[in-house]
Image (tube, rainbow, N blue to C red; front, side):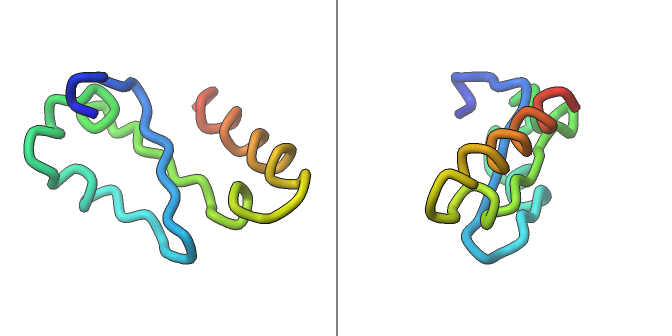
Amino acid sequence: MIAAQPDIILASWCGKKVVPDRIRARMGWDRVPAVRDNRIVEIKSPLILQPGPAALTDGLDAICAALKG
């Protein structure tokens, strides 16, 4: 992840809330643009992990909204 230098991190934990501070605390991640610029975005797990086509529509909508930021 550090080598990839992403501008945004989309995070989702099954049934748990994303805690951006835990991501920021990882060694070396302070050099990642997404972390430095506070662009860690939670995608609610039910939107992308639900069975069926809703994951493609609702999940994709959430991802698109996060990327537009």
